[in-house]
Image (cartoon, rainbow over all chains, first blue to last red; front, side, top):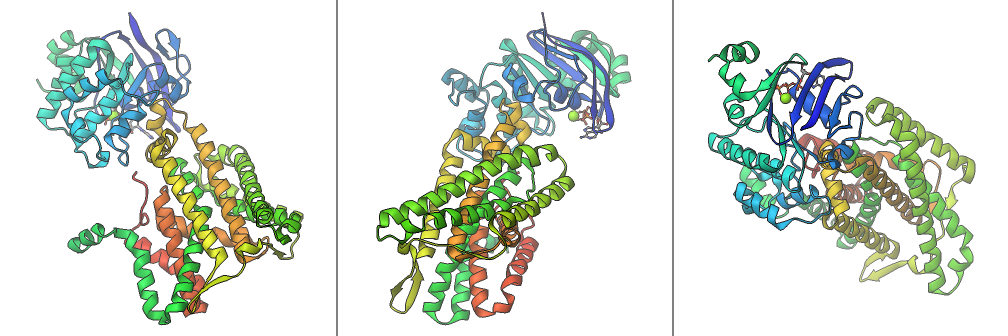
Length: 234
Length: 330
Ligand SMILES: Nc1ncnc2c1ncn2[C@@H]1O[C@H](COP(=O)(O)OP(=O)(O)OP(=O)(O)O)[C@@H](O)[C@H]1O
Ligand SMILES: [Mg+2]
């Protein structure tokens, strides 16, 4: 079943036309990977889905409902979480406060919280610390934890491994695999090796257009296509 | 240098500044009794400036909105309170402390209510259309300040208005050769009370958590499912009500007010929030106390420099800390 369907999405930022024709279908469950070179329009795509930029009318369907043009807060309440490229951590708030804000009622589901501690032990350790004092990797963990502290159908994650140490990247991969058991992840990633191990389906954006979509298995096998679309040398 | 700022940090960091200011003034003034009087006056003035400025700082922090019309709320608060007090002059004049207190309470509440109403109007009619556009914000809010001054001129006239105050706030306490005006103690206590209330609101409630988060990153607050615009209206109205309360207190302090009050206070209020750092209540309090103390000390030592001193102070602090003493984390 299709959870999120993006159809011929166009997005302008100010007077610049950034997305021209973005179309892809994210099936329910698992990890869908969005690839593309720097400046291709991946972040703009996620922000448009989230309503942080204004996508063209009728171009985004979530669970069959048209959400293009809705307010970001309403989109969030439908069950879509966002882990932005810059992580969007509230540095002056403690780890606990960052997480509390992500709950609808201000209360934690203890079972979910314990699971988050297991995935990211650092968060338990620095529970009462202000978030600005965390390392880059710990901030990324907090940002992901915020997205899963309550059940969400779809989690948009923008380049979570950028600048992280290999050990943290591995832990992140484990976490995503587990999260994808009960939710759907739409993952933007430049680290192809990280993405290929996680993704089931994928699409490539180039210059504001989706230029390829298919399964990760097929794309992984086609080194020519990778070289052509991502500039990766095999 | 790092070691020095570490050590200073352990003893209170930028919060030491008012203390240092007081110590320097103590040496320069020489007469302890005058110093105490000036310090109390400075603290009282600081607390009133805090009331006037805190909303401006939060509003900027939350929405990047620079409201040059903010001091119109101060002005309205002052005149509304003065009118209520004048209307209740018989209560003020009676021997009953209860009646006099009731008159004062009603005057302050009227100022607050007026501040809430004008704040709602300002936010929805004047600020809303120019959220993203700083140049138009400056022009339109400056325009609103001028229009507000004209409205006050039309309603209350151009001649200075004498502000009545209850008998129990008149006069001074004399301790040895130190004299402390009662009204100043009252102003200080009220400001401290409001500060404590704001700290509880910001640090102990969910709304406060949302405000602090919104000041840092409003997109992320939206992405977590909260409508920042509703929060902003609330904060804006709270800020205008506090400014009006500050204006009402200021009216009783000066005892003589003119329609030019708003324009005069605008500069001081901006100096306060810029020194303190935008978006933080602690910063605003710090800035307000520093400005209040400086104004009183310099006013005593070299009266001619009284106006310039706060400007010089602001420039010095900005050279040292470009985003103010205690800005919100961004
Ligand atoms: N706020 C903005 N104003 C103007 N142009 C923008 C803005 N944000 C992005 N763009 C432009 O839109 C295009 C796509 O940007 P986007 O951030 O979506 O790319 P990306 O695929 O996420 O790149 P990266 O891998 O570097 O994060 C770029 O050409 C960029 O310059
Ligand atoms: Mg990007």
